[in-house]
Amino acid sequence: MIDTGGTPYLAFLVPGILAQSVLFIAIFNGISIIWERDLGIVHKFLASPTPRAALVLGKALGGGVRALVQAVVVLLLAVLLGVQLSWKPLALCGAVALVLLGAMVFSSFSLSIACIVKTRERFMGVGQVLTMPLFFASNAIYPTSLMPSWLRTLSHVNPLTYQIDGLRSLLLPAGPAAHIGLSTDYGVLTLALAGLVAVAARLYPNIVR
Image (cartoon, rainbow, N blue to C red; front, side):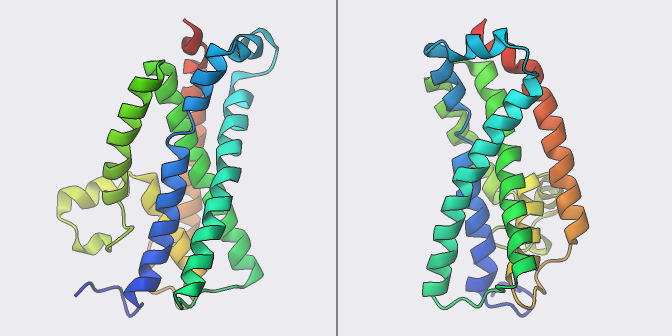
């Protein structure tokens, strides 16, 4: 029996599945830059005066918008399964912001990987290797309190953990399973996004070398 703090396990699982769908979309977003390089589009971007960080943020935001569509599908399925969710406008706006932030974080990470590996085959292999460890080293399917100490440490540096924690705070009516705090959740994701955008912007020209 998994202790979820009084929250039905299916309800506890919904934010984790939602974040998983966002992760799986965002982590493969970087392949688009490889296609754009092969079509000669990246060369034109690099020749323009547009800041590299703006190019990365634009790609990351595009991944975030696509993730929102997937998020709507997951929430509709949760409703069909009878999961009780909070539909307060402020909570929904906060959840949308978390979905966008999380998707942008992993999209920026994905772009950095694409700029390093440079080929579709290598990128797909690396992406598939990374998705499941990121997912299982988070609080998606069980609370961090049940993890061994080494896995709990990994979960605390995993941005996905903070996205899921925030989604549980906002989408579950009682929210007892969330314990990190919304300010920390948003803060960690924002800092992770800033750091990964800086890294991806620096690596961006490597894609054409």
